[in-house]
Length: 73
Figure 1 (tube, rainbow, N blue to C red):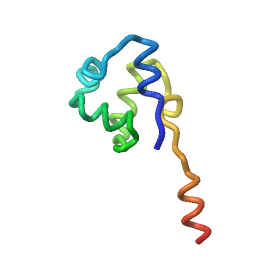
Figure 2 (figure 1 turned 90 degrees about the vertical axis):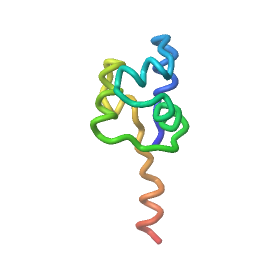
Figure 3 (figure 1 turned 30 degrees about the horizontal axis):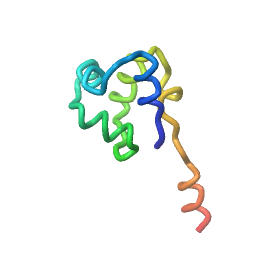
Figure 4 (figure 1 turned 135 degrees about the vertical axis):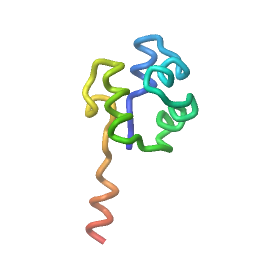
């Protein structure tokens, strides 16, 4: 899953630490999210989207091309 967290943080001038505190997670969680190494729970995705006044779909981009490839194999 791709996301726009880093971009949105930069626009708002919010550090990873600040975002983590706002949504109740550790800074490392934000790092892993930004790198695409961790998929958030629905609750966390919603909380992050709310910080940026966006919808979940505006922040997180689900790449279903892998799922389509698996289904066709």
